[in-house]
Image (cartoon, rainbow, N blue to C red):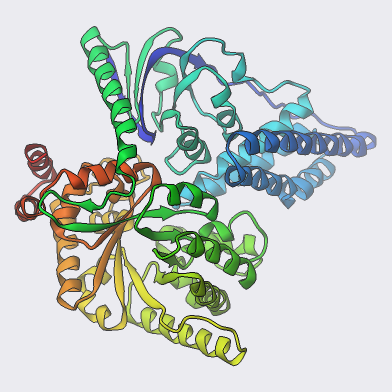
Amino acid sequence: MIVIKGIAASPGIAIGRAYVVEDEDIVVERVEIPRDKIKEEVRRFKVAQKATHRDLDSAEQKVLKVLGKHHAKLIDAHRLILKDSLITHDVPKRIQEEGVNAEFALSEALEQVNRQFERMEDEFFRERRHDLFDVGKRLLLHLMKRQKRSLADIDEECILISRNLLPSDTMGLKETKIIGFATDLGGKTSHTAILAQSLEITAVVGLSDVSRRVRTGDTVILDGEQGLVIINPGPETVAKYEKVQSRAEAEERSLETLKGQPAVTLDGRAFKLEANLDSPEELKNVVSLQVDGVGLFRTEYLFLNRTEPPSEEEQVKAYAAAVKALETREVIIRTADIGGDRLSMLGIEGPKNETNPFMGLRGVRLFLRHLDLFKTQLRAILRASLKGKVRVMIPMVSAVGEVLAARRLLEQARAELAAEGVVFKEELELGIMVEIPSTAILLDAFLPHVDFVSIGTNDLIQYTLAVDRINENVTHLYDPYHPAVITLLDSIVRAAHAKGKWVGVCGEMTSDPRAVPLLVGLGVDAMSVSPRMFLRVKQTIRGLKHESMKRLVAKAIACAESDEVRRLLEQNP
């Protein structure tokens, strides 16, 4: 039996026979094109582009039917890639200037961009390179007049093992007999992982060499909860996981009864349990969960896959739809947390090739450099506030001056709207994400200038522990259970409550039922959870005693190592 640890991309347990998909060999050779044949070669490339456009039209119809409008935007992203000057300009130019075949010119252009993607620190943007390869592969296959491999041809139930899966491969999985997949490559924020979650197909990615260690026909257990792949397990292990699988399926069905029930502990401590929202298209699902509100409305999607910033009207429409759908419940809209590397795609001049964009010009830092973008978003949020309860939250705050600047801009937005005769709600609360240690340590200095705080655990943990959580060399050190993290969280909650300020938490820690006892014991006011984990987290809260968890947190803070904290949690289920 071999156990390999990877990244848990989509939850669930899958047990079955492996089907290993070998990489499609696409060998691109450099061919010199005679000068009198260059025009014909460029024309051949343009024919392949048109064929790829037709592919995308067909794929869009399939996505709309299976996954809905939100995921159909992936096709828009691929269309933008196909229209990018990299494809429309650089490749024909390379054919003409270097006198080479279209396949070679395309592969060289893709490799050049791949090197740029690999330098990106931000996992979300780095994972977008798979979309680029997806489009590039479609083009190459048309140039070579080859058919794309179809996973639909796999006619038996299996667990797919592959070096990589492109988003277009994943979109079709629901129509196959594939019950889960494991890949060497990929991250949690790749479109492949996101699609697997939407399709509710168990997936583990980032396994390095699983495609070489598994053979077709091997028995495989895929643990999408822990990010494990178990190859050729013994009978006892299979039996254990079958029990886990049955129990999980039964629990999933019973969770439905928790809709509408309060998130209250056994000893009566109530928590506001909210959901994270990535786009208005997720509203239907979020509303159906009967959440207490939206604790984190990420607005980055409005700035993605386009060549100019979203207009104020477009933003008002998006925010108002969310606020109206939640009726009397609150929506916390976070101003966009995008990095400087997105600016050129929005038609705005910005820094090029930041060596560490994850800690560079992003979030409030970027928007204070581009006040027009910031004010437009604040005006849109103010206008949307008429539809219900809204708060605005500022990301990546590291200095009091940034909060004061944001407040001044908010007042300017209010004054402008009033002068224009536009109606809006005056009382719009402004809060900050606490995700940088300097803000957490000096929170007392920030509190007089904010109405609430929300702890962004993902960044706070990695900055506190100095761990890049997507760096495979140190990712094992990214640890929500580290006593230093718990101590810092405790000091934030205590400082905010001492000044009568509300404290929410968002980030992956809230969606991990194993970490929820710590948040309950810390006494945060609200948790904002991924919709997929919402009912499971509610179930966890309802099975705990707040007073016991307070004592557990006190013990955790006194620990020297995270393993001790984990043992404490295991002893206090």
